[in-house]
Length: 340
Image 1 (spheres, rainbow, N blue to C red):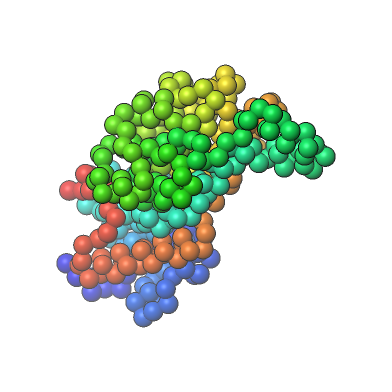
Image 2: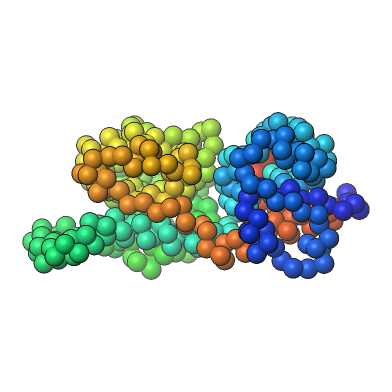
C-alpha cells in the first residue's frame, strides 16, 4: 500500500553519519528527520518524535518493546549495520513492523579485518613489534629459524563458522593466500558456490573445530548462538590453535576464552569485538596477566566502519524507506517469523 503522507524518520545514532552518508536527492530532503543519541530512555525518543514512521538505529543501539509500543505510526525499524540483536524483533513482529538490516554492507571491510587478525596472530605481530623496539630482532628471528614455528596461511586449515556475505568475502581472500578453507552453517550452499570460493563443507561444527588450525566466527547473535564459544566449544579445538572473532562479542564466554588460553588449547586470539560495548578498562579480557594478555590481539570493533560501509548502508536504508513509501517489498527483513 503506497503511503501519501510525509515520512518521519527517528535516527538513533551519530548525527554526523546521517548527515554525511544520506544521499542528497528530492526524496531524502522531503523526509522529516530527527537524530538522537542511543542509550536514552524510550520516553525521550517518544517525546521528540511521537509520530515516527521509521526508526533507523545504530547496530548496537537498543530498540525496546517499550519504544516500539509507544509509537503508534511506526512502520519500519532499520539497523544501520548488519547486527540487529539489540532490537526487540519479536515485539516489532507482533505489531506487524518489519525489522531490516544492511546485510552485506561491510562484508569486504570485515573480511580485510579478519585477514589482518589471522595474519597478526600467526606472526605474533604485537610481541614481535615489541621485540624489534627493544633491540631483540635478531634473537626472535633466530628462534623462528631454529624451531620452524612460523606459519603462513597456506600452512593452515581455516574454519569459518557461518558463510554469509562476510564469510564468503574472507573465503575469497583466503583462496588467494592458498589456505585450506572449510565452512559450516545450518544449510550447505551449492557446490558451484563452494568451487567459486574454494571452500569445503563440514556438516558438523565439532568436526570443523577438531580439523582447523584457525577458527573464525561469522554469524549473528541469537538465543541459540549467544555464548556459544564456551568451555565445551574450546575443548573441541586443536591444541595450539587460533581463534578469531570479528562477529559479535556476545558469541563468546570470555572466562572460557581465558581458560583456553591458559591451558594452551589456544595459542592466540584475534578479537575485533567484545561484549558490553563500549568497552571499559575493567573488562575481564583487559585485565589478564602478561602471559595471557600477550596472546590476544585486539582491534576496536572497526571491521565494519570504513566510510564505504556506511555509504552502502545508508543507501540501503533510504532505498527501503522509499520502498515503504511506494508499497514495494522491503529487502533484508530479519524478523519474518514474528510478523503477523
